[in-house]
Image 1: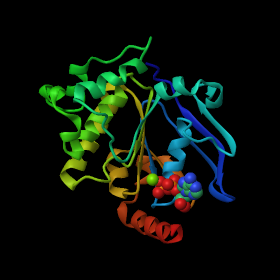
Image 2 (image 1 turned 180 degrees about the horizontal axis):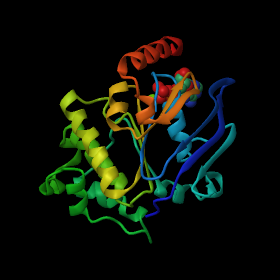
Image 3 (image 1 turned 180 degrees about the vertical axis):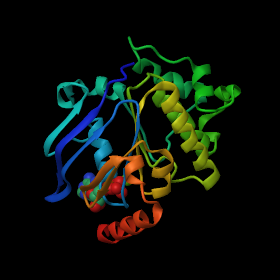
Image 4 (image 1 turned 45 degrees about the vertical axis):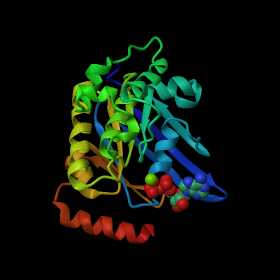
Length: 243
Ligand SMILES: Nc1ncnc2c1ncn2[C@@H]1O[C@H](COP(=O)(O)OP(=O)(O)O)[C@@H](O)[C@H]1O
Ligand SMILES: [Mg+2]
């Protein structure tokens, strides 16, 4: 797995039905780190994520993965390298094992992780492989979705508010899990959230987005320097502007 992969967005704009959704967005996603895209709802976070594995393409600007403009890559190969975990987990029919094996075809020449190792990586008991996936709790399904995305060892893991449907304790577990996966696999993580506290807990790097524009980009240490009060105020005013 490459540990040098970085994604760079360069002056990326996105329009939909004449409406500007992203306006000259530029920021970098450093290799092997957790980058948080933080912003109020409706600010364009999901839109940014969808561009990174070409579920959408920008109206203008470039997205560079490592050395390559992502438009020069085969979309399937891109999605092997840049895996997405959606806000709400969707399970295929059948057991957890079937869910994981279904994505194996995705790996091809790339080495697939072993299912036993994956289960332990996402903190699920090994005998869960034989349970019907749709019978699991949402938090457990989110971990199965994470395992499914990790099976082909993506270089970059995109997470779109993966804790939004979960209670506090479960979402804390998922946050800890994301950190563990990042540290153990070296996969670069892009974590989208509207929760300031979650960004502080996870991020190595923060990009603050409001109304489709990047307002601030900094290493987490610098971003959160000076404590939470000022930031909470900044974030709240951003929220009001974002509405
Ligand atoms: N397919 C679409 N067509 C028109 N507008 C869209 C579309 N997708 C998103 N939007 C709008 O773009 C803005 C950003 O949406 P989104 O990226 O989902 O924000 P976030 O994930 O930060 O909540 C919102 O105003 C949303 O209504
Ligand atoms: Mg969203």
